[in-house]
Amino acid sequence: MPRAEGTFDIESWEPQTYDEREGATLTRVHITKAFHGDLEGTSTTDIVTAVGRVETSAAYAGFERFTGSVHGRKGTFVLHHNATSEGGDRSLSWTILPDSGTGELQGITGTGNIVNDDGAHSYTLDYELS
Image 1: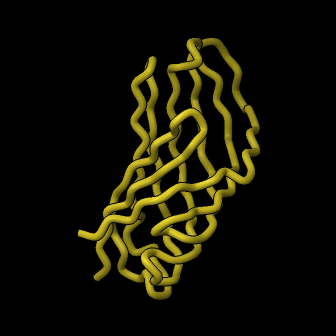
Image 2: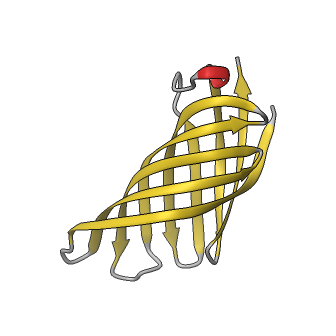
């Protein structure tokens, strides 16, 4: 199974808090990114975040549409995000939405991880193309 690796830059982060009741704050966030490495391109992402009373307790879920190339093959696909954080432990993963690939990426499937190292973002994506 091929693996794509690289980094991405967050170009915009537009949060909109919609629920600040006791226990957790819920926020919708629209994000744009630029990818470098084996993924070359841009994306738009919409996530919903929940931050607990202790700021290190958090989670988010959302969807991201990537437009660009994977190891030189051009097209688009959608990623499903799932992340949790408790204390210093983080889990940030993504899955390619089945049947969302277009162009030369039609039929792409796979899963990967995101690493946020004090604001420096990197990724891995293990994928297959049918």
